[in-house]
Image 1 (cartoon, rainbow, N blue to C red):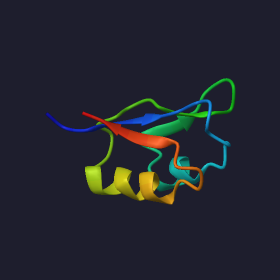
Image 2 (image 1 turned 60 degrees about the vertical axis):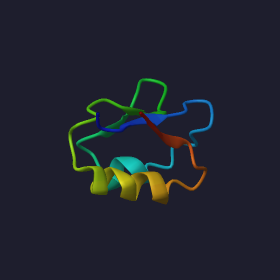
Image 3 (image 1 turned 135 degrees about the horizontal axis):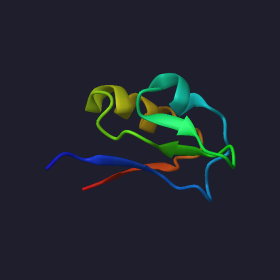
Image 4 (image 1 turned 90 degrees about the vertical axis):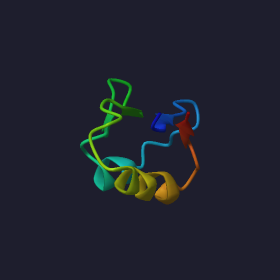
Length: 63
């Protein structure tokens, strides 16, 4: 089973780096906090760029 990205909404600072890195996977919700809307929208490698680029480390992998 593939890993699924998850954004901790309580830790997100709405910087937008994940949305820029993988707009096919991440977007801002109505509360202007990042969320995963299509966990299979990009390659795991591209999602990993967003995970590693998050300045507050609020994007996690769920197995």
